[in-house]
Length: 250
Image (cartoon, rainbow, N blue to C red; front, side):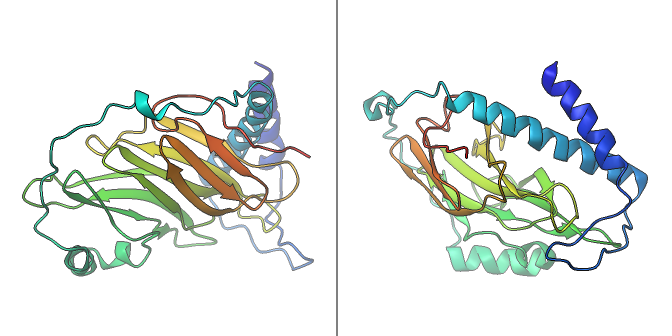
C-alpha cells in the first residue's frame, strides 16, 4: 500500500509537469505527447521508483549462497540442426523485416535449433520515440515463427546473455520520461525459449544518477550483470526469485 500511494503521488507530480527538460542546461523541448502517452509514461516511471525501493529492501536480506551447479538437470537429447547459418538467418531477416533488423540489439542467438533475434525498433511520429524491446523466433523447419514485445523505453538497445538451451537473460535500459534529466534504470527479463514467456523479471538502479549495463553473462546458474554502479549477481536468475547480491546503495 505504501508503494501504491507513492506511485500515485509520483504519477500526479509527473502529470503536472509542463514539458520535458533537457539536461546540462539545454533548452526545454516542446512536449508533443498525447495525454494518454503522458499517463502511460508517468505510471511506468512510478513503477521504476517503486521497484527501486523494493530492490533496496531486498538487498538487505539477499543470500550470499551460490547456486549449486549439480542441481540443474542436464539433457542428453541432441538439439535439432537449423538449416540456416547465422549469416543466412540475418540476411533473411534483413530482406523480410528491414525495419526490425536495423535495430538489432545483439547478434542472433541459436537455442534448441531455432534462431532468436532481440531488437528495439522505435515507434512514434511526433516527439522523442519509444523503443520497443522485441524478441522474435525465426520460422524454419523445426521452428514456428513467434514475436513478443516485452517492454518500451525512451532509450533503445539491450544486452543479451544466453545459458545454453535453457533460456535468455535480457537487460533493457528503462527511461520512462522523455526528459533529458530523467534517470535510466535497468529492467531484466528471463526468456523461456519454447513459449517465449517471461518466468522472471528483475530491476537494477540507484537513487543517484543513471545505471547502465556494461556487460552481462552466465557463470553456471549465476547471472552476473556488470553495471556502471556495481556488479549484481543473481544466483539462479532463470529458475528462482532470489534477490541479487552485490547491489550497492549510496
